[in-house]
Amino acid sequence: MPLDTKSFDLFRTLPLSPDRLWTVLTDAKEREQWNGPDATTLLETDAADLRVGGLDRHRFGPKDAPEFVVDTRWYDLAGPERAVFTETLIFGGAPVSTSLVTYVLEGDEKQTKLSITVAVSSFSGPDTLDEIAQGWAGGADNLEAYAKGLVQPT
Image (cartoon, one colour):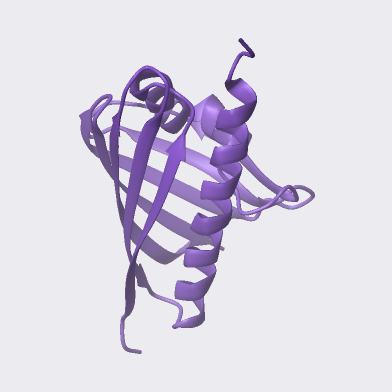
């Protein structure tokens, strides 16, 4: 079976300082609040180790049956400017895909421009590539809504 690959970029300007957005992006419990394609998806942390070389493990999927495991390995943590990590999606004990993800944050105390670059390799066919891209787009939309909800009215 050939290896299927795809790269894509997402951009959002969020109403948080880089320091606050960094925490939203890297703290496992905060990621549980927004990191899914839609409201029917659960992301639950089983292990979190936010350090270079550290591994986070999450269960992911429909709220009534989170059947996927997501392993996140951290490679570069230059907060609050940049994070680089891989995510391996596992189903039934076998890897389905691995993505190399880069976050770049640029901003001030009022807002941050977030650039996300994802390069994914699918071990389960080309349909997985579109599903991963749709999942990231939905997650970025959820992140935007979550970030707006964190802003204190002035």
